[in-house]
View 1: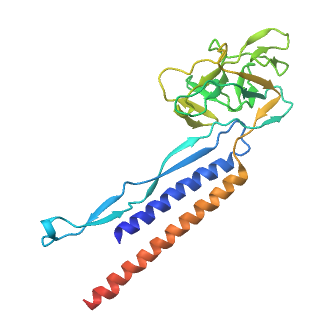
View 2 (view 1 turned 60 degrees about the horizontal axis):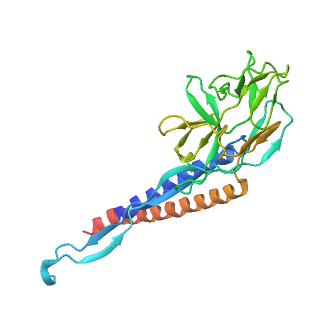
View 3 (view 1 turned 180 degrees about the vertical axis):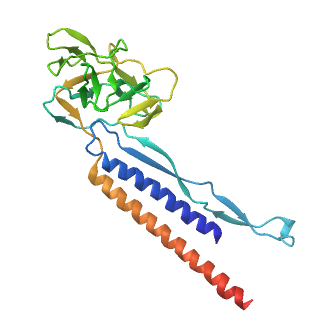
Length: 273
């Protein structure tokens, strides 16, 4: 009976974590460049049950009863790096990154492209959020103040919003002078990137991601005055949230039934004995 309670409780915890993930996806449905998370649920290994005290059984062997499930858990959360739709904004500081032809991946996971950013600590980070801004010194930054880096690994000083960006990422200031080229990097296995908040991703592999600029196998272009929207499907997310809620509710009822059975075992059967 206790195993049944543990299994139902594990199911409730897994569905609660899934619901939190889906709620976060829905909350970021309007965040530029946001990539929706997907949950992977997995069952704990099953246990084999054997009958006890089987000395009189033929051959003196324990009698196999069968298998019992030991519950389920949320194994991992994986971002879906599918390209989001484009939205025209008319703002010079909005730059959308469009993926073109990408080289094949050995494990079947779609490859992805990212901007190169510099966080508050000066560390290298990556992003798909092209909702940029210009700081007080004229540098191109994210809306949160993280610097956009060039192919030379330097900050890009555009001066004011009179700058322009061509489809290769080359930036020209309002004097039509080249200010640098926005660095776009290529991730063959984007699942090695971990979300850190504020649209930033950290690479957990060795070294840094290679640049896609000049790589003939990688196709991309940048489009100024456009934004890549979130790839969250709001209607599908709402459906999945309802499914997670119903699964949580079903496990809750099972747990309540076990609790009532335990109460009878303690208060009624124990008193009769």
